[in-house]
Amino acid sequence: MTIACKPSAAVWADIRLDRLERNIRAIRALLPPGCAFMAVLKADGYGHGLPETARTALAAGADALAVGTLREALLLRGASIRGPILPLTPCPPDEVDIAAENGISLPVVSRQWLEEALRRKTTRLPLRVHLKIDSGMGRLGICDGSELRRVVAMLRTDGGLIAEGVYTHLATAGQADDSFVREQHRRFSGMCGMVRDAGFPHAVVHCAGSAAALRFPELALDMVRVGASLFGILPVDDETAGGIELPLAQTFSLHARIVQVKRVGKGESVGYGRAYTAAEDEWIATLPIGYADGLSRRCTGMPVLVEGQWGVIVGSVCMNQCMIRLPSFVPAGTRVTLLGENGGRSIPVKRMADWIGTIPQEVLASFGSRVPRIYSTGRPPD
Image (cartoon, one colour):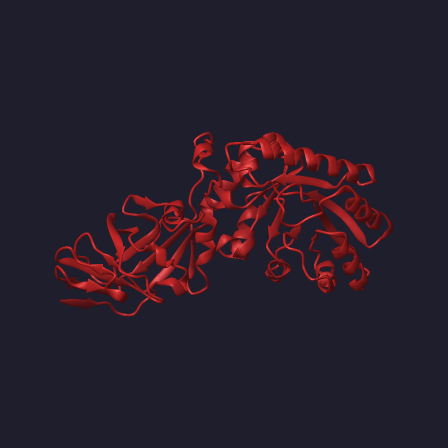
């Protein structure tokens, strides 16, 4: 027996902006007085939508925004979003005029980058910069004092530059052992002292991302950069998570409506390669979401929610579809939840991340523009 549904909006992500706002306020309440709050919205607001999350973050009291790239910063300016914006990845030096003309700050990650940027800069408008210090992450940034002194000398002599901040990134803030966090802070403090002594005492100093902001209030310094925790994620290991008492709410849910329901007999197979064989007579439903939408092929076997009951993804996840074993018959058109709440039960983003062997941030960033975002302040539609 086969039952099909009429065409409809079949896949969507429900974005709870009210929860985003509450998360920001809850985190901010933990910070020392006077500490500024930078909301990190890289990767299209962790997959939630960049302009929408930016507006919500600013309305909730964020003082500044960080994004992944200059392009994302320009998207915010194009959406009439004002205020300080810092891309965390350096742009090509020949794009510094664009940043200056749009009031966008840029990271200085090396002496060579700054020298080339100054050669390419033609606008008389000032370029605001944050000096990125590599204190042990081994990714981007200025590593040693001699290079930092040369960078600071250029800042001092070029009137077209404004030293707005100095920052670093902590590699192990989410791990129970905090010894390397302390070592990175020691190294960073020494480099900050060089910047301050060189005549920049008012540069904003920041080193704490989500994990450090929640675990180490003494490392909040002048500003924190909070990204993953805005969206209900604790980016810490399991040993550390138990020590953080903070009511963060998941902001992202993922739903799809059943396209077709079939009765599959015991011993019949489902999917490419006959990857699944029914152990008994079963109801199998097809959902119009697959790996082209961001649903990992490793999600096979993962539980999903159907009218508050547990189903499971079976067979191989296809490019545009996947199949689920239903707990009982439901009609085509029924909403199935892969992330978030359904019928009083919930699937956290971390559950999917653990299932496929990654982190929640990658899960959120995986679902691209093929999945429409619906912004709400209440429960998803039935």
